[in-house]
Length: 401
Image 1 (cartoon, rainbow, N blue to C red):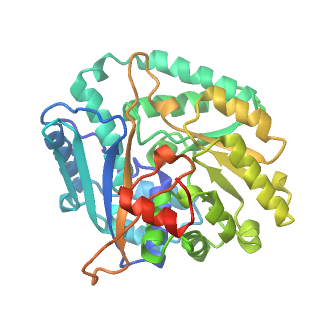
Image 2: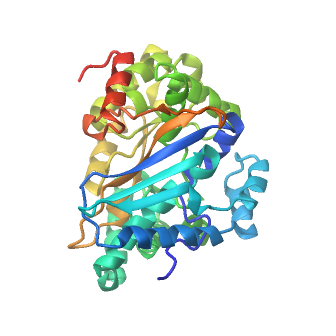
């Protein structure tokens, strides 16, 4: 079987930036991750074994000097000591367990040092997605020439509407080739003439390097959720924001706020944080309701929300992004991260609804127990974690079902 991930940087930038912040702030933390298929997919017999073959193949990946030089040029906020770490980094199959139950459902668990296992999530999700279409026999029939035209048409509409947007589609793509086609089409369209909008770049570092674009991304929920497991959810956002500025000194200033809901975040989002962070990212809940919560919070702090960026990334497509753009431009500087709609929008193919979430953490390897954690987004259907853990965190935050 061909190797699906063949480049160390075929990954989202936020995994690298979080890895750096983890080493800087929580170097001895150990974690567990768990895979969830929200569609309860029945996978073909032997799929878990094929997946583990791909995990083993990751062990031969090493970051190249070309990749490091590109990151140094494009991401000058990353401290150079981090590249010394990456040059010595090797994946290890022992961090991963994958199996199928009697019904054929897929189970995956990661466990190990946080700074090691953090670089598995996006790669493994991309492998699961592409492998599924390979095994199902649909990958060979994909028409990438037609997909280029379809992606170009999406770019025309977004740019004409004034949207500033990026590709966030690595995790649930049909294939690397599909994401490559999307990024090429978006760049070609943007360079074809002057537009009101802007194609900012892609979250995928390798494709950003291949197409000479800006790699984009900051953080994911796991950074806040792990801190919530170590210290409790009440102050998790405060500690996360403080740790982030400790590492990046004001760079990478878009904060993902919805790990434990708006209310507790708002209590932690003091004026100094509001001034230091360039903006916030909306990844769950109703986009318009969340926008007005953000606007009202900035107003309460004496800050003009029109000077702040709001990144929308909650299951967007072209139509919904354009609608949000037309509305939000009056209140903030909107931008958009669009994922599955870009990289898995082939006729007759249902995109996978898969995630890997951090579920437990301990602050040092010396502890003989983990603390469970969870995610309480603004969409109750997106709560992740054991039911009893979700209930305990909600009680701690005085949230109601």
